[in-house]
Amino acid sequence: MALNDVHAIADQLLALTADLDDPTARGESVLPGWSRGHVITHLAYFSEAMTRQVEEALQGRLVEVYDGGRPARDAAIEAGADRPAAELKSHLTQAVTALLASWDKVSPTDWPLPILHRNSNLSAGLQATWRELTIHTSDLDLGVTPATWPDDFCLHLLDFLRPRTPDNTHLILQSPETTWDNGTGAEVLLTGPLTSLTAWYAGRPTPTPITGPLPDLLPWP
Image (tube, rainbow, N blue to C red; front, side, top):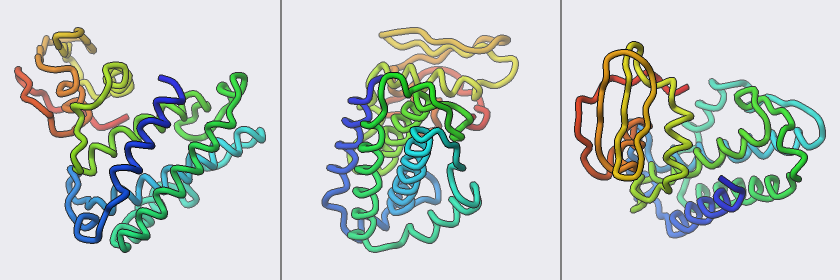
């Protein structure tokens, strides 16, 4: 994964929402209970929060991801989800553009700088940006699905989500391209395209069917 991957998915997201109208914004996303307005508002606030993480880290400072923590973040998403489409688009465009500009400031020696997002560093923050933009672009249900996820993104997301594998389970995900496994215990083999296996592990609808007994996964880490 490189910075240009983040730029590419950001460009796709902004192009996908460029013609958003009010009925479409009110329509359901693939996330239960969330409209497209919820997803767009979340992405805008995430982008603003991550921009602050980057800018403060470059100044040698640590700052909370969201003022008021998760409750304030959730309340802001609910409050902003039903805004007019034009306002949603403007907020998203400004926030994502500012975030990309911040990432472009990071020099090769800056990536280990610490941030409070997941108590990690700028390198991990860039990966988080890649995940958030890629997954939620698909969540908008505007024609882009996990079938478009690149192999390197799928393998990254599978590794990030390893804590989802149930206890006492040796989960094996087998695609024509690769075999990925995690955990110990009773063997559970699932087969299908890598994108579909990854979408299932991420709790998203699968672009194509997968074969095998689907275990109940643990929460996102």
